[in-house]
Image (cartoon, rainbow, N blue to C red; front, top):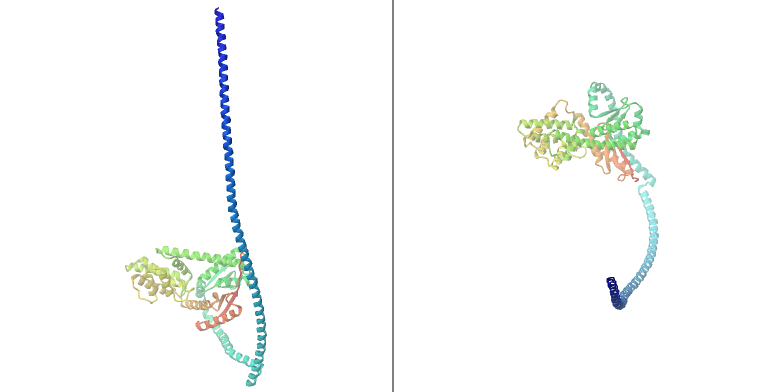
Length: 516
C-alpha cells in the first residue's frame, strides 16, 4: 500500500510537471507572437519613414541641382559675354595695327624717295664742290705762280728746315757725349781708387746678386728670343744684368721694394726650374702678396717693440713700408727707429712722455713711405695721413718741426727734432750723391705716370731709360708715339740729367676668360 502510494505521488508530480511545461510553452508562444507582431509593426513604420526620407532627399537634390545649374549657367553666360567682348576688342586692335602698318609703309616709301632725292642732290653738290675746288686751285696756282706739286715740295722743304733745329740738337747731344768720353777715360784711373768703397756702396744700395748653379741657367733666364728676361724686366720694373758676373745675375734698381721683390721672384723661379712668362707672372703675384703681408708684420713688430699702443693699421703698414725706403742713402726705417729711441731717451731726461716721444720719432718721416706713390713733400704727406688717422698733436707738430715748418711746442716734439739731427749727422749715415740720383729717377717716373692712360712707369738702366706701360683700350698705337714724345719733352724741361733718357711706351692688350 505504501509502495503504491509513493508511485501514485510520483506519477502525480510528473503529470503536474508536464502540465506546467505545457502551460509555460503556451505562454511563451503567445509572447513570441506578440513580439513578432510588434516587430512587424515597427518595421512597417521604419519603412514608411525611410520612404518619406527618400522622397525628401530626392526633392532636395532636385532643388539643389536646379539652383547649381542656374548659377553655372549664369557664370557661363557671363564668361561667354566677356569672350565676345575680348574678341571684338582684339579684332579692332588688329584692324588698327594693320592700318598703322600700312601708314608706316607709305611713310617709308615716301622717306625712301626723299633719301634718293637727297642723294642725287648731294651728288650734284659734290660734283659742284669738286669743280669749285679745281677752280680755286687754278686761281691759287695763278696767284702764287706755283703748281700743286711745286707747292707740296715747298711745304716739305719748310718742314725739313724746321726739323733741322731738332736734328742739330740731337747732333749736339751726341757730339757732347762723344766729347766727354775721352774725359771719362782719363778719369777712369782716378775712379779706380774708390772702386772698393763705391762697389760696396752700390752692392748695398743699388744692386742685388742672385747666384746661379751653372751657366746654362742664364739661358733659361733669358728665354727663347729673350722672352723671359723681357717679361721679368717689364713686370718687375728692374734692370737684369747677365754676363758681368760669373755664375750670378745682377738685379739693379733704385727702388728697394721693387728690387727685393725681383730678387725673391727670380730665386723662386730658379728653385722651381719652370721659367716661362706665365709662370713668372704667377710667382711674381705670390711674392708681392707675401711682401705685403711681411710689411704689415714688420710694422706690427716694431710698434710692439717700442711699446706703442692703439695705432691705426694703415699707419702700421706704412711703418713696415719704410723698410724699403731710403733718404740720402740712409734706410728710412733704420733712421726712424734710431730717432724713436733717441727721442724717448731725451724726453725721459727732460721730464717728458717717453712713449709719446717714441711714437713721434717713429712717425716723423712716415710721409717717405708715400712719396713713391703720391706727389708732394714727405712732411705734408706725413702730416696729412697722421691727421686722417687721429694721431696726437705732438706727433703732427714733430713732423712739421723737424724740417722747420713749425716751432716745437712740447718736449716730445723738441726731442724728435734733436734726435733727427743726431741720427743724420752720424758719420757715414747719409750720402748726398745717391739722394740726388734717387730724386731724379723718381721725378722721371712721376712725369710718366701723370699722363693719361699710363698704368706704371719704371726707370731702369741707371735712370737712362724709362719704361712706360699704358692701357691698350685708352691709348692706341699712334697715341703711344705721341705720348713718348710728350714724356720726353717734359723730362727735358723739368729734370736735370747727364746724357739722354730713352722713353719706351709699351702697349699690350690682354683678354682673360675662365672655363668653369
